[in-house]
Amino acid sequence: MHKIILLIDFAEDYSKSLLKGITKYSREHGPWVFCRMPLFHRETMGIDGILNWAIEWEADGIIGQLYNEESIAKIIQAGIPLIAQDFKERFTEIPNITGAHHETGAIAADYFLKKGFKNFAFYGFTDIVWSRNVRRGSTKVFPVQVTEFIILRTRTPAKVKLNSGITNLAL
Image (tube, rainbow, N blue to C red):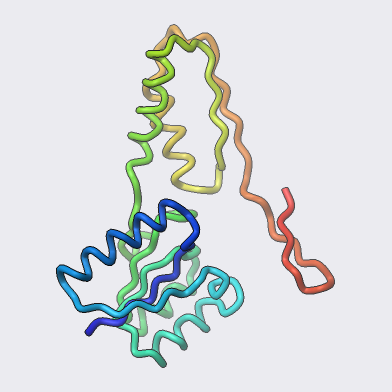
Protein backbone atom coordinates (compact mmCIF):
# COMPACT_ATOMS: atom_id res chain seq x y z
CA MET A 1 0.00 0.00 0.00
CA HIS A 2 1.45 3.35 -1.09
CA LYS A 3 1.51 6.27 1.34
CA ILE A 4 1.16 9.66 -0.34
CA ILE A 5 1.34 13.09 1.31
CA LEU A 6 -0.98 15.66 -0.28
CA LEU A 7 0.25 19.15 0.47
CA ILE A 8 -2.38 21.20 -1.33
CA ASP A 9 -5.02 23.85 -0.62
CA PHE A 10 -8.12 21.76 -0.06
CA ALA A 11 -10.40 24.82 -0.25
CA GLU A 12 -9.66 25.70 -3.92
CA ASP A 13 -11.85 24.27 -6.68
CA TYR A 14 -8.77 23.47 -8.76
CA SER A 15 -7.27 21.50 -5.88
CA LYS A 16 -10.57 19.72 -5.21
CA SER A 17 -10.67 18.60 -8.85
CA LEU A 18 -7.02 17.55 -8.61
CA LEU A 19 -7.83 15.52 -5.49
CA LYS A 20 -10.70 13.78 -7.32
CA GLY A 21 -8.32 12.83 -10.13
CA ILE A 22 -5.68 11.56 -7.73
CA THR A 23 -8.19 9.42 -5.82
CA LYS A 24 -9.62 8.04 -9.07
CA TYR A 25 -6.10 7.10 -10.19
CA SER A 26 -5.40 5.50 -6.80
CA ARG A 27 -8.55 3.36 -7.04
CA GLU A 28 -7.36 2.06 -10.42
CA HIS A 29 -3.69 1.59 -9.43
CA GLY A 30 -3.84 1.41 -5.62
CA PRO A 31 -4.48 0.90 -2.90
CA TRP A 32 -3.07 4.20 -1.66
CA VAL A 33 -3.28 5.87 1.73
CA PHE A 34 -3.27 9.66 1.84
CA CYS A 35 -2.06 12.10 4.43
CA ARG A 36 -3.83 15.40 3.78
CA MET A 37 -1.35 18.00 4.94
CA PRO A 38 -2.76 21.56 4.94
CA LEU A 39 -0.61 24.25 3.35
CA PHE A 40 0.08 25.96 6.66
CA HIS A 41 2.52 23.11 7.34
CA ARG A 42 4.60 24.33 4.39
CA GLU A 43 4.78 27.74 6.04
CA THR A 44 5.25 26.62 9.65
CA MET A 45 7.29 23.41 9.34
CA GLY A 46 9.15 24.22 6.15
CA ILE A 47 10.67 21.63 3.85
CA ASP A 48 12.73 20.13 6.70
CA GLY A 49 9.61 19.50 8.78
CA ILE A 50 7.72 18.03 5.84
CA LEU A 51 10.70 15.81 4.99
CA ASN A 52 11.00 14.62 8.61
CA TRP A 53 7.28 13.80 8.69
CA ALA A 54 7.54 11.98 5.34
CA ILE A 55 10.47 9.89 6.57
CA GLU A 56 8.78 9.11 9.90
CA TRP A 57 5.51 8.13 8.20
CA GLU A 58 7.48 6.19 5.55
CA ALA A 59 5.80 8.11 2.73
CA ASP A 60 6.14 6.78 -0.79
CA GLY A 61 5.58 10.16 -2.40
CA ILE A 62 4.52 13.79 -2.05
CA ILE A 63 2.19 15.78 -4.27
CA GLY A 64 2.06 19.43 -3.34
CA GLN A 65 2.09 23.16 -3.82
CA LEU A 66 5.73 23.90 -3.22
CA TYR A 67 7.96 26.90 -3.60
CA ASN A 68 10.61 26.46 -6.26
CA GLU A 69 13.54 26.66 -3.86
CA GLU A 70 16.81 24.84 -3.44
CA SER A 71 15.46 23.14 -0.31
CA ILE A 72 13.32 20.87 -2.52
CA ALA A 73 16.56 19.03 -3.32
CA LYS A 74 16.49 17.62 0.23
CA ILE A 75 13.32 15.65 -0.55
CA ILE A 76 14.72 14.50 -3.89
CA GLN A 77 17.99 13.41 -2.23
CA ALA A 78 15.98 11.47 0.36
CA GLY A 79 14.59 9.40 -2.51
CA ILE A 80 10.96 10.40 -1.99
CA PRO A 81 9.18 10.92 -5.32
CA LEU A 82 7.83 14.45 -5.57
CA ILE A 83 5.27 16.03 -7.92
CA ALA A 84 4.66 19.78 -7.83
CA GLN A 85 1.25 21.34 -8.35
CA ASP A 86 1.50 24.36 -10.65
CA PHE A 87 1.78 27.12 -8.07
CA LYS A 88 4.36 29.89 -8.37
CA GLU A 89 7.00 28.72 -10.84
CA ARG A 90 7.53 25.45 -12.64
CA PHE A 91 10.22 23.05 -11.54
CA THR A 92 12.82 21.65 -13.90
CA GLU A 93 13.98 18.76 -11.70
CA ILE A 94 10.58 17.25 -10.79
CA PRO A 95 7.27 16.68 -12.61
CA ASN A 96 4.72 19.51 -12.56
CA ILE A 97 0.94 19.25 -12.54
CA THR A 98 -0.33 22.13 -14.60
CA GLY A 99 -3.36 23.30 -16.54
CA ALA A 100 -4.00 24.52 -20.06
CA HIS A 101 -3.37 28.14 -19.11
CA HIS A 102 -2.44 29.42 -22.59
CA GLU A 103 -5.59 27.83 -23.95
CA THR A 104 -7.69 29.30 -21.13
CA GLY A 105 -6.50 32.80 -22.02
CA ALA A 106 -7.15 32.20 -25.71
CA ILE A 107 -10.68 30.90 -25.06
CA ALA A 108 -11.50 33.92 -22.88
CA ALA A 109 -10.15 36.37 -25.46
CA ASP A 110 -12.04 34.64 -28.28
CA TYR A 111 -15.27 34.74 -26.26
CA PHE A 112 -15.07 38.51 -25.74
CA LEU A 113 -14.09 39.15 -29.37
CA LYS A 114 -17.13 37.20 -30.56
CA LYS A 115 -19.29 39.30 -28.22
CA GLY A 116 -18.05 42.40 -30.04
CA PHE A 117 -15.78 43.87 -27.39
CA LYS A 118 -13.04 46.17 -28.67
CA ASN A 119 -11.29 47.15 -25.40
CA PHE A 120 -9.70 44.62 -23.11
CA ALA A 121 -7.85 44.52 -19.83
CA PHE A 122 -6.03 41.69 -18.16
CA TYR A 123 -5.34 41.77 -14.44
CA GLY A 124 -2.82 39.21 -13.31
CA PHE A 125 0.24 38.42 -11.27
CA THR A 126 3.72 38.80 -12.74
CA ASP A 127 5.28 36.39 -10.27
CA ILE A 128 2.90 33.46 -10.82
CA VAL A 129 3.45 31.22 -13.83
CA TRP A 130 -0.18 30.32 -14.56
CA SER A 131 -1.23 33.99 -14.51
CA ARG A 132 1.51 34.96 -16.96
CA ASN A 133 0.52 32.10 -19.26
CA VAL A 134 -3.18 33.03 -19.25
CA ARG A 135 -2.14 36.56 -20.27
CA ARG A 136 0.13 35.24 -23.03
CA GLY A 137 -2.64 33.00 -24.34
CA SER A 138 -5.12 35.87 -24.47
CA THR A 139 -2.75 38.29 -26.19
CA LYS A 140 -2.09 35.82 -29.03
CA VAL A 141 -5.78 35.84 -29.97
CA PHE A 142 -6.38 39.57 -30.15
CA PRO A 143 -6.34 40.84 -33.75
CA VAL A 144 -5.19 44.23 -35.01
CA GLN A 145 -8.72 45.72 -34.83
CA VAL A 146 -8.69 45.68 -31.01
CA THR A 147 -8.85 49.33 -29.97
CA GLU A 148 -7.02 48.95 -26.69
CA PHE A 149 -5.53 46.16 -24.61
CA ILE A 150 -4.39 47.05 -21.12
CA ILE A 151 -2.33 44.68 -19.03
CA LEU A 152 -2.57 45.38 -15.33
CA ARG A 153 0.11 43.55 -13.40
CA THR A 154 0.85 43.15 -9.77
CA ARG A 155 2.97 41.00 -7.56
CA THR A 156 1.32 38.70 -5.10
CA PRO A 157 0.88 40.18 -1.63
CA ALA A 158 4.05 40.27 0.42
CA LYS A 159 4.12 38.70 3.86
CA VAL A 160 4.69 41.06 6.73
CA LYS A 161 5.61 39.67 10.14
CA LEU A 162 3.86 41.52 12.95
CA ASN A 163 5.24 41.79 16.48
CA SER A 164 2.59 39.38 17.73
CA GLY A 165 3.99 36.66 15.49
CA ILE A 166 0.87 36.70 13.30
CA THR A 167 1.56 36.83 9.58
CA ASN A 168 -0.43 39.53 7.77
CA LEU A 169 -0.71 40.00 4.01
CA ALA A 170 0.05 43.45 2.65
CA LEU A 171 -0.03 44.71 -0.92
